Image (cartoon, rainbow, N blue to C red; front, side, top):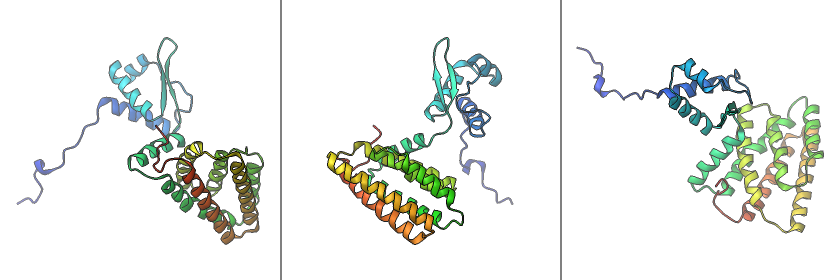
Length: 246
C-alpha cells in the first residue's frame, strides 16, 4: 500500500501571470548585464511579437519593473522603456519603509551601522598591503565637502574597501537611511562647525591607525566616533521614529 500523500493534501502552487514571467525575463537580462544602464528596450510592438503577448500584458510587466526601479518608461511618440541598474538607493528606500512600518527608531538604525562599520576599520588596518587603502581614504577626506551628510560617503568607502560585496550593500542601505536622517538634522551653526571639525579629526586619525596597521585602535576609534555621532544625529532629527521616506 502506498504511503504517498494524496494530491489534495499538497500545497497549491501559484502559477505566475504572463506579465510576471515577461518581467522576470527582462529582469534577468538586467541582472546578468545583458541589458545595461540606459539601454533602450525594444519597441512595444517588437516585445509583443517576441513574447506573443498583448499590449496590456506588456504594460503590466513594465509596471512591475518600474516598481522595482529597474526601468523607466516615457509615454508618447518618442517614449519607450529604458534600463536602470539595481540601485542601493532603491534598496535603502524600501528598507526605510519597512523599518518605518515596524516603528523603528533612528537610533536603532544608527546602532546597526556601528555594528557593521566598526569591524570594517579593523579589517582594513590588518591588511598586509594598506598603501592603496590609505591613499583612497585620504583622497576621500581631502576632497570631501564640509556638509555633515557628505561624511557618510567616507564611511561607505571604508566598508567598500573590505572587498565584501554583501557588507558593502548593507552599508549602502544603512548609510542611505543615515543620510536621510542627517538631512532632517537641525543644529546651530556653531555646533555644526564643531561637529564637522570632530568628524574630520576622527577620519584623519582613522587613516593614521590603518596606515600603522593598528587594528585594535582603528576599530575602537571608529566604534566610539560612530556611536557618538549616532547619539547626536538621533537626538537632532526631531522625531524618534524612522519617518524619512514619506
